Length: 376
Image (tube, rainbow, N blue to C red; front, side):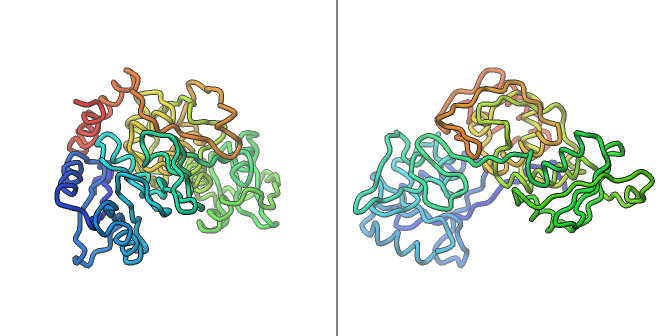
């Protein structure tokens, strides 16, 4: 299998109580979209949809949505109507707009875009794009607000990742213990690491912010180096992914401008969705997270994990550290602007170059995407 080909995600979608004209509009939009394959299924097919869109303006309206929510409990059941629903529900506004439809669908699949009802009426924020301004419900990882997505942040200077980075920075052979049990033995000069625990244990430790960590210097003449079973780069990459877990790495913020110094050797690193496409783009242009999210219609968690992995392995260079907006950023969260904005000329040029590069590998999927993005 050619690992250079970008994977096109398939989303099974079901329409409920929707007339043929509305369905035809969606089908037309799906034919123009190549980064996600929206496969429309029928109710009697026996297949389980990931996304169910219910026409709330149909005669059955709310009753149809409630029945679909019961019948497809594991799916995202969307209320599609001209006016917000009187109940808390994922909400897509009519009429559909081709320029924002797929961003809205992606946000809905990620658990965003939920209209929260207050009493007998729905509370509406001031925005011209309702699907992008709904109040969040509890337990959403990336919370949606008016024209923005609230994302969590993490500090790579703490926890076991912080201890690992500190050992490398001080260029000393160090054993990292948690609860008096060895977890990692770091040999900066040799660029090797002995991972003393299995992957599930290390993953769990990366998710802890304040484990009981002890550092011990490894004396010369030891034989632990002979057991070193990983490189520092591959270990840092994997630990960065596990620690990030869909969060933005400190000190970056959504306006920080960054660029790849060089293409990571992805064949020797832990796999990460969309890493090929992101690498192809970021080697050619400097961009912020705010603009990257608009140019590349990818899952926010995949973007944030990629940024964390490349930044902490020193593949990503910060070209401009823009000051944070104190009202919108904090040590634990930041906001990504989802409002439409035109890309800069150099970013458009880089996107075209990236599209040409991907065309050689993938039959032009990214090229067609960029033509639509640039309205060509």
